[in-house]
Length: 231
Image (cartoon, rainbow, N blue to C red; front, side, top):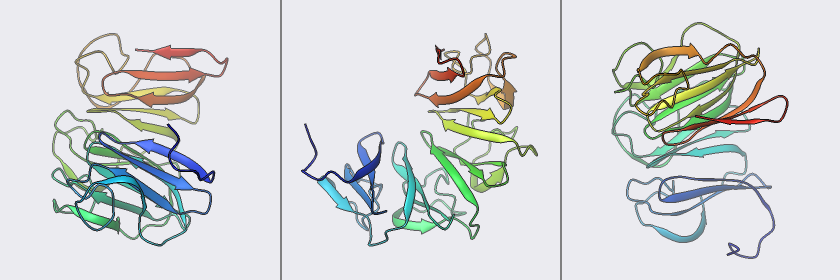
C-alpha cells in the first residue's frame, strides 16, 4: 500500500519494528514502534505515519537496526539515537537517546551500517570503525568487550563497503575481496565452517565482489559479472 501521496522519497530502510526514510529535500522521517526512542522524535511514543525527525534538511544516509538508528549529514558528521544498552549509539555511555545526537566531533564519515546492536562505519580515508555490542566479536577488534565509542578495526585503509548483520559483519575492500567476522553458528561468515572469528578474515580468494549485504543470519553478495551469491 502506498505511504501517503508524496513522490519525493529518496531512500528507505527498515529496522526491526520501525522504518526510516529520506526525502529528496534532505529531510529525515520515521514511523513505527518507538519504545527506546528509535524514531528520533524526542519521545517514546509510536507513530502510525511518517513524522519528520527534527527540522534539519541535510541528511544524506540512514541505517536502522533492532532499536537504534545511525545517520550521516552532508557535512560528514555521524549521528545516533534509540536504545544504547550496549553502547551502540557510540556516545561513550549506555544511556538511551530519543533524539539524534552527534557521535564525536569527526566530520569525515562516508558510510554507516547498523546490525542488531552494533555498527560499522567508513571514513573518507578508507578506514573501518565499529562500536556497540561485541559478545560474538562482531566488532572485529579481537575481543568480546562492548565498545561504547567508535574504534578503528585494524590498521587497513582500503575498505570499500560494509554491512552489519545480527551478530556478525561483512565488508569489501577496494581490491574486490570479501571479508567477514563475528558469530558463525549458521555459517554466515562464508568460511566453510561454523567457527567464530574475532577479526576480519578473507572469504575465499576471489577479488571480483562488488556489493554485500548481511541479513540476520545469512549473507548475500554480488560479483562484477552480475552473478548473485549467498551463504
